[in-house]
Length: 182
Length: 266
Image 1 (cartoon, chains in turn cyan, purple):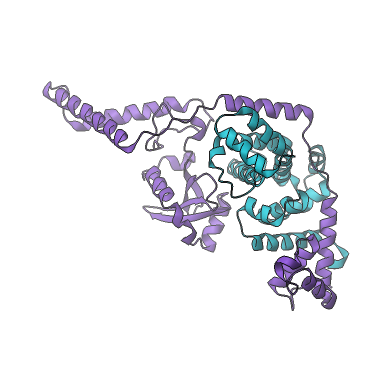
Image 2 (cartoon, each protein chain N blue to C red; image 1 turned 180 degrees about the vertical axis):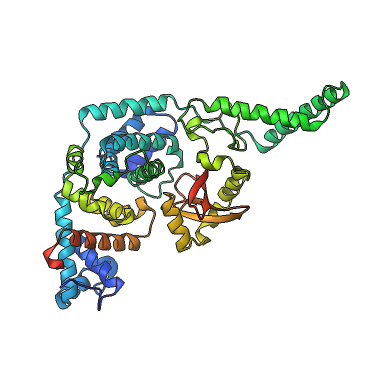
């Protein structure tokens, strides 16, 4: 794993057109970017498209990286925004499938989720959360980002992340019929 | 019994959540508001304890979820696609200084004026209106030609050409898009409004987006966007931009009360 300082140097080399540096940056983060995109979009093909768009944006906008956060955090922020764009496009084109296929009432949903490499009961529970809560839970509890990192990725204060996490988990607990909640 | 927030404050909720996910820090927050404070809260308040247990159970349950991974084939495909995307990237040409661009515009105007004078003198042209009309047709034709194939998001007849775009640098992928129904009635200079909205981007935080607007934006698929201004014409349009200034400053025009996007400027 590359340390953050070196990553910033790598990105500086990307700005001057160093393709090898770009490939290193990409290899360091492609798994997590794909995982975040898959959890947000719920579809492997779309997640791969979003991952591809994310790294093309990273390449294009490398010079805009100001070093205020870690390179990884900056990349995940681009990934989340790319996924939001995809969701918006899907919403605008009703013929396209919206990730409400994650809805457990859809008979094909479970098979589709399993084939995407996700756990159906977790994805079905996450699907009932609003995007704000869901993304906070995905980034923190599933992807293991720290609170400041999640705040940076989502572009909100740490306090807002804490509150979204608390409320998101509480809704999940209710959804799961958690005994301590009943 | 389901725990309620009775007797708990927002601060307590944060503390309990932080204790559950291990993000409390005595050193940073002080014992009263850090881990020790949270633990004491959980010990003394049954509702807080129930919340804490529910939170830890959910965290543990989520932690059991496997991290989805790409197959080797998907990874190879991704690398290929990104590599080819980069190859096709054109290096951005540095923008010409303002005085140079002004010079180009002035030269262009002189050429057009000279041409009009010559044509008027030779009796070919009745007046300036005819030329303006013909120029407009040419621009529309160029836009259509540059738009290319159907389904690429390219502009269609009746959609204004973005100010500053030429047929050469026109990218169909990034073309302004609009709904077919609205395209017939687009008479406002949306591209200019979009430029204005971008230039006042720094003041965006001061703009209030009320509940009705938020609901309307959600219906239009524009969550995490804010209204930066309203335009009153025959109809009312909300000028909308991403909430997050780090996002691309795409400007959307949403017709209200229909809540539909009628124009998008990238």
